[in-house]
Length: 112
Image 1: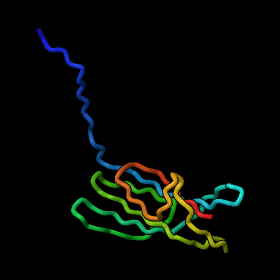
Image 2: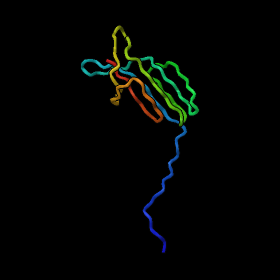
Image 3: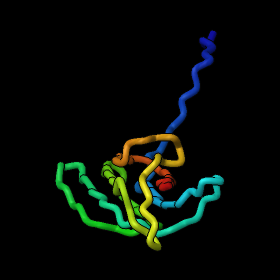
Image 4: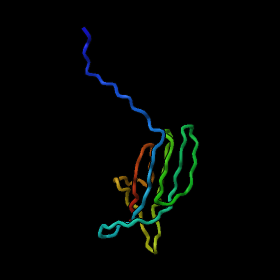
């Protein structure tokens, strides 16, 4: 008599790439948000440990091969249209200006 089992095997295929979208907004005292460009630094770290860093401007879309790491750092303070704006947080609540991504993500840096 065959043995019954409730184990199911699921094959998960790894995606060959992942995408990260970096945006930025200015938040007013009343809570309104307006997109504006911010120059930020991003480093692409390859699986062998190589580093490539340069500046980008929001909004920016990165598409990287699986296994790579994207490290993004936004400035603490920016000047836009004569206003001094300070970094508050990312829209997902993270307050560190530096983030590392190895998976699909869309995040917005909030300035006020």
